Length: 369
Image 1 (cartoon, rainbow, N blue to C red):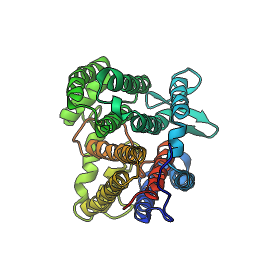
Image 2: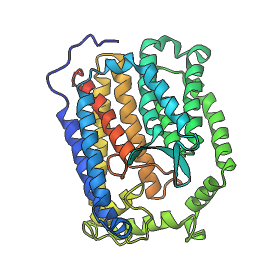
Image 3: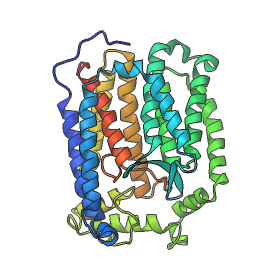
């Protein structure tokens, strides 16, 4: 699967500027949000910031290395990549292999660090679907021969992720894959049929796990249990509210003083809004919008179907995470436990996200922007 067009001499520097800007904001906010907690737990206020800086450095190296690899190379190895992702997803469920954190068996320890196989699956599935749909797009209009086999693959991945359990990542995987199927030309009637069974299945997942019901109850009325299930969202709103237009000033958050649990992770946007205010939050959202706009432009301008689907798939994956995370933080949807790309503390998520963007940067070298 080789592109018929030769690469341009330069990548999309505008996209690189947006990514680096988000990364710098993320490192600053991880330090600001985690300094108190890190000093209390590790006697080092820079503990999380130093590790985030290391992850960012590794991720940037991965991004620029991947940006040099012709994107059609990933199509050549799509099947082995997907196989490895499935092996990791199964391995993390095995006792003695997977590490349990926050009630989920989602990590595999590698020395002093750990990786999340579900993060690899997000990218691996995008690469495989983009390759398959680029080669066999004519089958996608057939429910039996095209849509159904891919559907089984997607829900097998979702099922393995849910065994951890990790509903947030599972949602991103499924929704991203559905966007790829839609862009590739799947019939609307297939999605209508799928939506009915999807709603039934989603309801079943919620009913089968009491903690998910508690999260929905806390979402509908967090003040009914302010010290239990509603605690996190209430503290998040208490952080965002006082921020006002300009915020309380960088480093001056009150909620990070052990009110908002682990504020440098999923709820880092709440601390940013508290310290930098509405304008700070608007700046961040503007950068994410520019990333979405540029990624979509690059994908649509790609010289072939593989480039289009890869570019759109990766851009949609990142954008969905942003939408879900911020919606949770401001109380629009129940807590899902998903990170904010480029900002939340974490090695696997940050490194894989930057590597994924590297593929989009490489596509930009072929795109006619």
